[in-house]
Image (cartoon, rainbow, N blue to C red; front, side):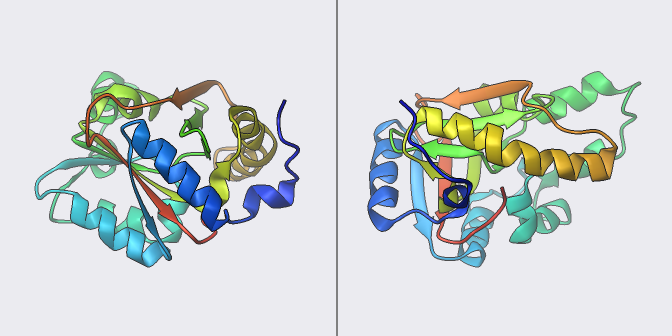
Length: 209
């Protein structure tokens, strides 16, 4: 049975005990996890993880925008920003080339929508553009996640996506693209078999949806 979380709790930062329990579960499932107090600390840590010359795809993320990582990555001279390359390709005529760039970068960076205390990571998408690289295509995935996204159970995580994230993302998409968003595709990462492939950077600060 799902825990009855109110919408205010979807934006409430997790307690120290919940953070500790979640970190232990994630690491037991092969997902490296670190915790920082601020987005600034997390931003520096993420940039330090990215090797020189790497091909980096930053999936759309309000969290990354809030801490300045989107701009830093897309204007970096230290590595290759996939999004900058995408902007030079025709959306229709070069769609296959665009798809390959997004699915197989060296490094995928971004955020996710919920993490359970059992160490399950949930990512929802309208198009699924970031899910292939998250599941397998990227050599490494780095996700910056506010502790407000920690939930007790998988059912709570799904409800967080449906009742909290989707309305906010739909409002944003309507304003920018003229149409609402949708949960067309959903990825649940239960564990990572390749050591060191996924890193989650938890931040004790309200960031993103």
